[in-house]
Image (cartoon, rainbow, N blue to C red; front, side, top):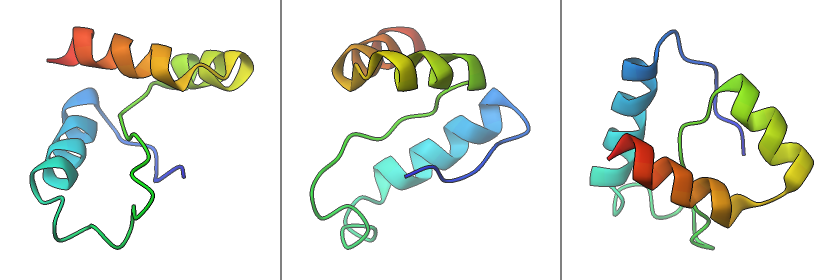
Length: 65
């Protein structure tokens, strides 16, 4: 599910953190437990082409935390 485009990395990460830290409040949105992350347009194109969600999740975790 694509949520929206953010004006900056900081804004996107704020949204991500709000979702992460309030997981119980949003539990009905992601009942299947799908991974979620912030992704740039360029990286989204690569992810869409390669279909390697686990690989991008690892990249996201290593580079944004």
